[in-house]
Picture 1 (cartoon, rainbow, N blue to C red):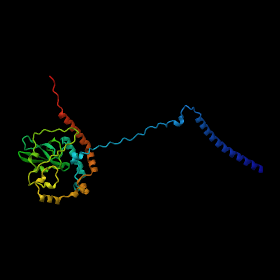
Picture 2 (cartoon, one colour; picture 1 turned 135 degrees about the horizontal axis):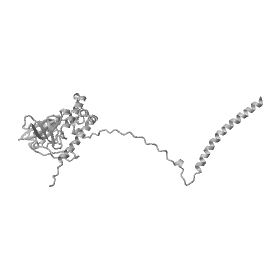
Picture 3 (cartoon, helix red, strand yellow; picture 1 turned 180 degrees about the horizontal axis):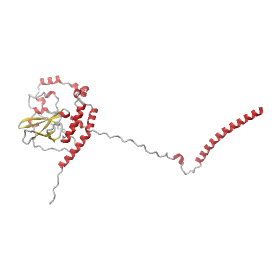
Picture 4 (tube, rainbow, N blue to C red; picture 1 turned 60 degrees about the vertical axis):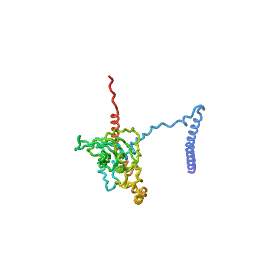
Length: 319
């Protein structure tokens, strides 16, 4: 029994030693073979195994970005009637959206060009009492206000030494044609003081020809300063900080200056809440113009094509 136990211990030790030696020697042999094969390369050749580039992987497809319409920043000056009313109590999103659709539909039927306060315009509208059932009025735009389908502008002209003003609804279906004879701006937001100015500042020829502005050129600003007639005036112009009047200090006295100083509110230009309540936020403006940008852009392109056709003169055939 003792001899059998001794033999079993010797056999177990030998078998365990053989397993460990066999596992370790194989690993070392493979490692030595790899090192020897790497070092056996010729000195003039590069080691392709170390410097070989990684396998070329197919490029991952990048998602194509969705192109959003780029709304020009001057749309809020060219098309101010598309912006809703800043007064919250008069807001109605459904009505505003329907009005924008109606305005676009009207613009497809008639060309409503770009104009500003101070531009000289001619409007042809249907008039059942006129000789040819139509009337044409030429004048300077002295005001532009309201929004939506209620947008309007006022033209003024002096005819036969009598000042005349006509108020037009921009989207009135009776308007047949709107022409801009001279596209320009003035220094003030409205020109109501022309009512108290000398007549020559509001007199324009009814047969005035249109002055074409080069495509892409900025709208010129007319910095002319009008001369007012002596008092009395229709309004107290000395209280309105007008930049387009030259001789306003000539006809006011010290009592007028003192009363004007009493009603001045210089802090209003720092009142952020008043500015917020009287304007439309920029984010909302972008949403509104992004909705109508495509249609307005196509109408602008059509207007440019029509303008080129009108300026093109067909050459005469040679005999």
